[in-house]
Image (cartoon, rainbow, N blue to C red; front, top):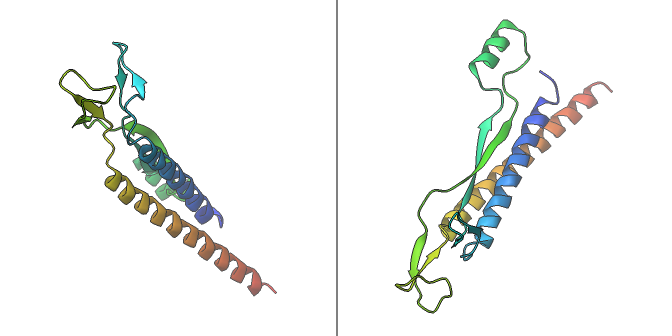
Length: 151
């Protein structure tokens, strides 16, 4: 186990949480966008909510087996972003006959973004980011104290 492994784990988490906050802010910014993409019929579709999938690095059975045999130092190593996927929830239909994108019955397809849900996700990502900054500072403090022992 390297003395910098805690820094590497925290750095990967900081990177993942930063990406998560960027995607959430994009979702909030496009909460009213009715013309985001063009489908195969040439019609505009509303913005579809995006989500970040995060998984731990090196948490496979093979990594634990290698660690048990002594071939590797540690099975853990932070997290990584596997994909940014779109939410499959249906679009919200809002009655607004004066909207330029309204259908024949007067309904407009709005993005499937719930601002309240996005704010809760943003708070979660922010708290996780802050926790990782605290972990980096604690690791740095421990290393500085370890260097003072040698004086």
